[in-house]
Amino acid sequence: MQRYAVSSILAIAVGVMVTGGAGVAATPTAVKAAHDATRHAKALTYQLESGMGTVTLQRIGTTRSRVTVRLANPAAAGTRVTLHTGRQCHEPNAAAPVTALALNPVSQQVSQTIVALPLEKLQSGNYLVDVQNATARSQFSSACARLGSQ
Image (cartoon, rainbow, N blue to C red; front, side, top):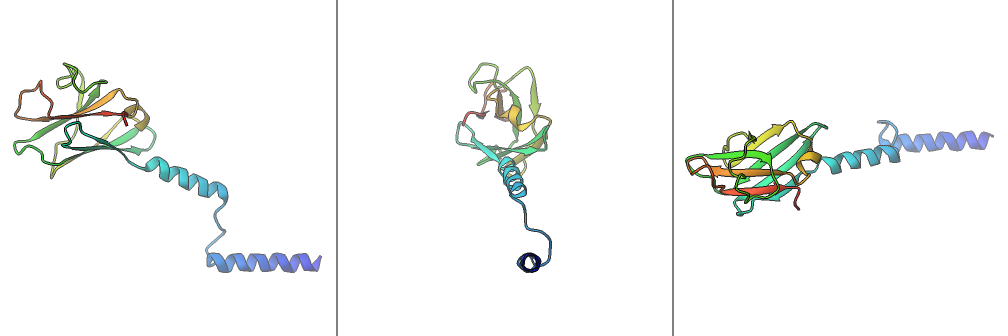
């Protein structure tokens, strides 16, 4: 019985020395939860069709997402970036959809907007990000990316 008590005390002492007395080592469940959270937080990046830049999606909680559009060479006169439903970038109404969510203006080659859509919905393949030169005719898209089509 004394041998068991001494070995238990030694095991605790070694555990405290290894962790620096800061607490108990992480359980396998905690490690898995941290790994899963990190994996889910990773960004998903899509290429704009014209090679003009990228669209990156990032989860923010369960109901919102960050949409970041990085343009290699945005138009000097301004660039309009929209998020809307659709499955094909070259549909006749893709450049001028009935319902579109205007994303934040491009500043220093980047537009970053938090939208009230979960990441899973954006990845469904039913959403497009459309980039247009603000001075060009509205029916023509400069670049487009279908989200969820990797």
